[in-house]
Length: 220
Figure (cartoon, rainbow, N blue to C red):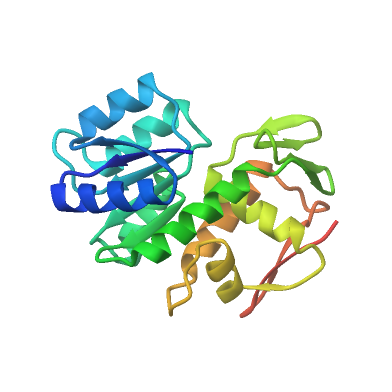
């Protein structure tokens, strides 16, 4: 697996590069946003580790630029910014995950493995008129392809895999966002609303129900 690290702090770059290479990953690095963008346009990466505060092009703008043509490569922000507003901003820009500096290297490795597991799926899932091809990252509704961000995709897949079971907001944070500490669950509602809107669910297509004060349940 080939990972791109876009980070301007040399010490962090060296630490990540050495550690991830020891884990068996191929590593390419860029020390500013412009170089990072150029690399994403000329090479294919399996995952991108992205700092928020970068020279030339900010991490948030780089994330948006990457997502114009690349909707599937997982992007993980490594940043000291950690307010709910900033977290939502990063996720809306197309990031899949968010790790606050300073972070545990062991936690980062586990999160990388989680994202790679999503890329290995080959099964097909269904929910009413919705079909998901996990191997191709394709979501269809009545045979029409629906464009979701990878985080939206992962959340929808999670709900369908747990069809018929109430998924609490804390469970979703832990299993989809990899967040096991106390956190504002409002970010989940933002993504659920985005999924519903993109799927254009009609009244009779009540596939994703809200369980007030608890979470969500997917049913045909």
